[in-house]
Image (cartoon, rainbow, N blue to C red; front, top):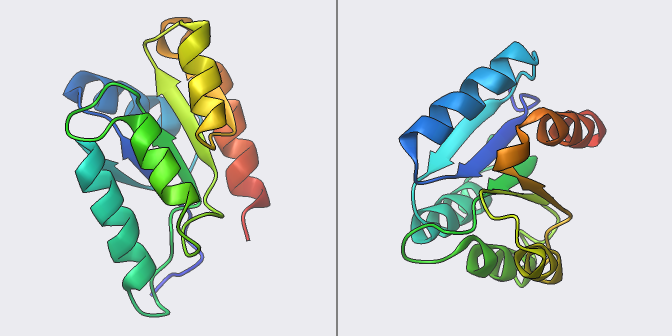
Length: 137
């Protein structure tokens, strides 16, 4: 098993956005396994499942969260992760269609380390994700 392969967990409920981001990651030559969760509860469960698996498993190196998703919002998912010892170290980046300053501040207050507006495209997000993956242990 290749435990050194990088892993990204993407919380996104819009299939079109998943396809666009998947293509953007590939075009940017960011080599990482992409795990997709379509709602906040699924994202939490996937993080917990990865944290509970044996030593051959690994937590995602980066979490990319949309804000407005079903069940639990991206804010709630981030707050949950940052309150769990086993998950706290995973860097969380928000990628949302919201351009609200309030949403940006709330994302950072929840424990996110960066916020990118989907309306501005994915270029800055990709640079940030690449940096996080390159510095990941």
